Image 1 (cartoon, rainbow, N blue to C red):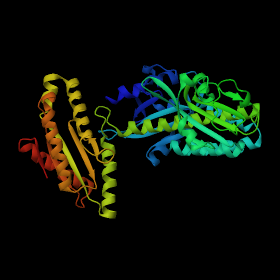
Image 2 (image 1 turned 135 degrees about the horizontal axis):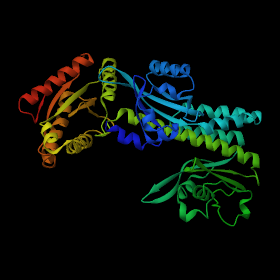
Image 3 (image 1 turned 180 degrees about the vertical axis):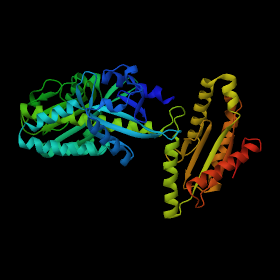
Image 4 (image 1 turned 90 degrees about the vertical axis):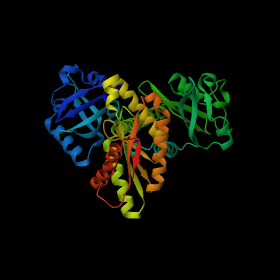
Length: 449
């Protein structure tokens, strides 16, 4: 399957199963478990869990909830070590009726160790940590940022905070301010984007991002370098890089009107909190990557068959509730088989990628849903669109393809187009598919409505 090329590149362990048997592992999974590929393929995935009961519980939970998002559990590697992980599972249904899943795991051993360390600290720290744990229930990065900044402000009674992310443009790294408390808007605007290399010795947050280490200035009035005075009332300033392992995401600055406001214990505690925050960022991004992988066709970068059905049911729900019209097009490439037979499947795949890109760029971005419906078939769901409106778009698609098909071996499309009229999903698809077949029977390169 073409998806495996992308799965191989994902920097977290990935497994694919069929009837609980492992059918694919990426390089990270091999490294993570300590097993060779041949020692994993064909094995029942339960042997990677410390107990069969734990495996069965996870399997039951995945089936009941149609997948798992960030469930904490344990895995056992070849050396017999038990590793704390967060598990993400998307269920699969194979054409022969068998079931399986695509799973990703994130090693959270360092988080668990951090938890144990925190629980041995003072009672106030325990309360703060529990507050931070609630952040893991949210995967909205903007919401996470606001919550973390507000928790730090309230717990440490800090008047001034700025959070920046590391961004790269044209090979140059920048500190980009994302959220602030206590700074004047005009100053934030003036210093919102700072080139790291140029400002690493003039700004403590740039220095922290550049070195990957915290920088504390107990009295900014005596600072000869590494400090950018943005607020005249500030007397002490602490910059901490936001990083997961060695990967730096950005930095956070906490400033106070008191001289030497932050104790050694405060700095250690803040480092721990920022480490957890970085892990939450990784979790959120991993979720986005896994979700994107589960709904996209890897070859054409259009949505897959599963996502098509999900969106179709949603549109039918909207139609039944509010009477909102929508239309469906099923597009079948004419004489595509001759490309594979004549030029090979690699060239056929190139043509499919080009067709997928052409369809996506000629419909409404983030509104119309372009899916790879089958081998050389695509479908497009047109929300809030009646038949006449959808026909205008499909005619444009047909015209564009004919205009550019010299580079696509003269390939054309047969298009069936239908507006939803209260049918069941199966009936609606069947009627639209019949129109596609009718267009093909009439010679192709046409639309049947």
